[in-house]
Structures are given as structure tokens and as C-alpha cells.
Length: 166
Image 1: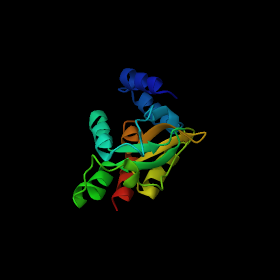
Image 2 (image 1 turned 180 degrees about the horizontal axis):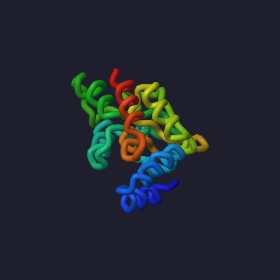
Image 3 (image 1 turned 90 degrees about the horizontal axis):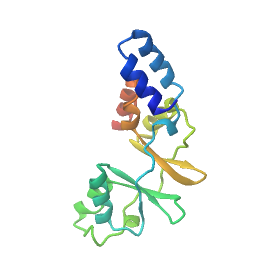
């Protein structure tokens, strides 16, 4: 089900209780590809930490997949990585490379994963965002925020956030 269909249902029929029930059931069939951010904003390991921070600021995001020349995910860098691995250690973010502070063990998900399974995985893995990979290439990003905007996942989101925050 596409975003457009959900948007139309929400705006035109949301006052009708039957429509609300339909939306909640329809959300159960959503796939990651239906709500992921696409294209994903990314950086390379050779970019400086300063450049990564500027990209995060420009796009109002807190994590960037780190990709190779072939668009495969080599790691992920978060705003927290920048603070804990650069700033708090007194290092020059404009001299450091992203590859020096990125997390290399990255959980990934496919576009065909059911949203319900993705929510469980985010909670279990204690992560807020995950790169979406198809044929070993980055095709998008999925975040708790992407899922939270969908009707029908309030309890699941709350549970995932509780797991992440432990």
C-alpha cells in the first residue's frame, strides 16, 4: 500500500470509525519500502567528520550510512558518534575521517520486510534507524520516526522505544 493511499484514507475518511479500523488493518500489510526515506542521504568513509555533521544539520537527521564507491554500506555514523568519539576527546572534527569514528557493525533491513517485523527488530536490536539494503546496495533508511507517522503502530512504537532506551 503506498503512502498516497494511506494519506487519502486518513484525510478523507479518518472521521469515519470504519475507515480507522481499515487503516489499522492496512498498516499491517505495509512493507519497509512503503515508508522508508528514499533516497538515503549518505557519506563516505573518506569524508571528514565536519562534513558529516554539516550534512546532518542540513537535512535535520541524526545518522548517516557510510557507503563505498559501489553504494554498499560500510558503516553508520551518528550525531552521538561525533560527540563521543570526536568532540569529547578534543579531536579536530575537520581533520578526522568518518571511517575513524563510524560504527562498522551495522544492522540492515530489506525493502520487502514487513513493518511489524521491522518494529520488532528495531526494539530488539536497540536501534532507532536502520539502512535499507537491496542487492547489497543502499536504497533507503528506516527510522522509528518513519514508522511513528503511520496509524496503527502506537503500541508497537512505544514498546520499541522502551526497548531501545533500556
